[in-house]
Length: 84
Image (cartoon, rainbow, N blue to C red; front, side):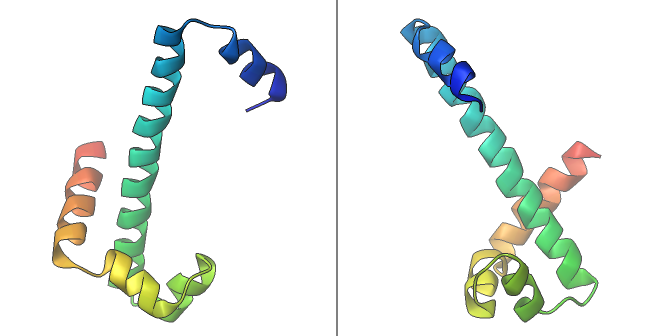
């Protein structure tokens, strides 16, 4: 976001400012879900946790802990199907 846009946002009323936060939170959830789906797709293709972790600047163990659980895979797959 540009400095000018941020300054403009600060001048707006609270209801509008809260809407900016709501929109950003929604986009962050979408990005998090997309990342989960991308990681799952890479794992299905055979990409190692080491390679995934390296791209995301984390260890293989951290990547597997974050995206390796069955519950997380189910959420990401459901999100991906809903978007298609």
